[in-house]
Amino acid sequence: MEGRKRSFLAKLKSLLKEFPCVAILGARQVGKSTLLKEFLGEANFLDLEKQADLDKVEADPDFLLAKQNKTLIIDEAQICPKLFPALRVAIDAKRNEVGSFIISGSSSPELLTNISESLAGRVAIIELSTFSLEEAFSKLEVNEHLDLTNKKNILARKKAFSYKEVLDLCLYGAYPEPFLKRDRKEFYANWCESYIKTYIERDVRALFPGLKLDSYRRFIQMLASSSGDIINYAKFASSLDVSQPTIKKYFEIAEGTFLWRKLPSYHQNSAKTVIKAPKGFFRDSLLSNYFLKINDTDSLLAHPNFGQIWESFIIEQIIKVQSVTLYNTDYYYYRTKSRAEVDLIIDAPGALIPVEIKTGSSTKVSKLVALKNFIEEYNCPYGIVINNSEELDYLSEKIIQLPVNFL
Image (spheres, rainbow, N blue to C red):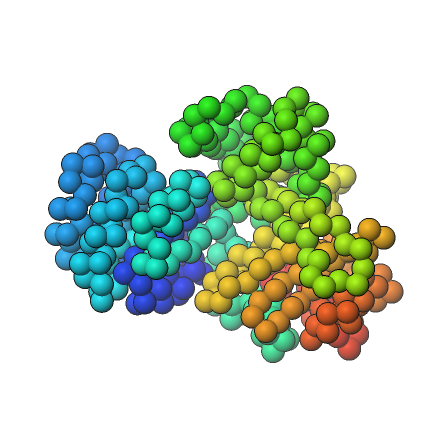
């Protein structure tokens, strides 16, 4: 990955000092294997997609794990279910040792099941996402990690990116290999098609052997035009001529394999009538743009879905950078039946922060009634507007304008 640093390394290092095992989850091709080989070059490494390595584990996992005297990395661990009981035994045999094992995988549902059944209390789970803006443009040193629940951190931000750079990441997506080779148009297009084909015909087929793959692929294509919308299960079921339970299963698969993010509604103790259905979006804009045939900046900006693509892209960027902290944070959206809406609600320990995302270069306070009302109703310390302005400033006493190129 051309020497690019990944921001979650500090969190990984911290967890390896506390837990005997760390599980790293993430979508296919986000750089898990590359990162681990670079980070722990002296560790033993097994890739279970290689038959020779899989044979070693399956032959006698208890013996293999017991004889390790340095950190063992096991990539694509979900391929070998018998590994997990053996890991539990190996960890319990040396319960006070930390940093002994790292397991990683791209198929979250199966991996999480094995972890919860065999390794509960013994393993820390973290996720490696596609590139953040800082990682994509090698600017991790420009600012401290962004923490939108810390006002001092926000107000101390420096401009880190040009608007063109932000648009580039939104256009090309943030999977490491295609982004770094984005100037090679033919490679980029072939990579996208190959990724979808591999994801559906290998990953999904292996995890859900009874699934109708043609129907699921059409479902993934439908998601592109619905990214950023409130989820309407009935609409999907009617369009694909399948049942609503089947559609809900499709959404679970897309979310569990890191393709799609569901954003629940925030309706805690609201005095208003709040829509409770979740929203959702592609976790990386590469896929939505690919299916919508958006190939350049002009077509991105002119596309009728640009507002939703941009909003989803910025929300995912926020979640990526917040995820490097060591505390748990939940994310929601808020919308009333009278159509008052806040794009993102960050619910962290001790802080509830509403965020509005705009595509323009300036935002009038008169257009932020829903944000202002949410701040008052929930007694939030402040709210944030992310737009394309050049100036980080207060728009009102409790609303901070944070330009997107300061993220």
